[in-house]
Image 1 (tube, rainbow, N blue to C red):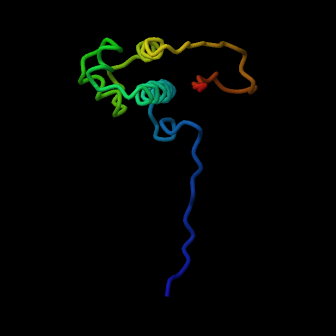
Image 2 (cartoon, rainbow, N blue to C red):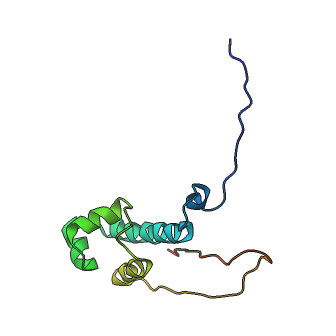
Length: 112
């Protein structure tokens, strides 16, 4: 016989890195979303790691790091450069914050 136990559920924000207490949560989330887009395009092209390394102009071990989301060695700028190397246009839009309180936010959207 099982008994029902009440379990406290904590709802997170839209940024798991902030929920985990990382001080650089916004940058981590931005890098992760950019890397997801890069990896999606690489997978779509069915490139071998050597071919991806050549296209992105990085050593093959860094392709592996990118594919495994070990992003500490990549800047946001570098990830944006990978997207343009993959024939993608990248647009950056700056606009006033819609909410009345708090700092602005960074969002990454991939259109396919």
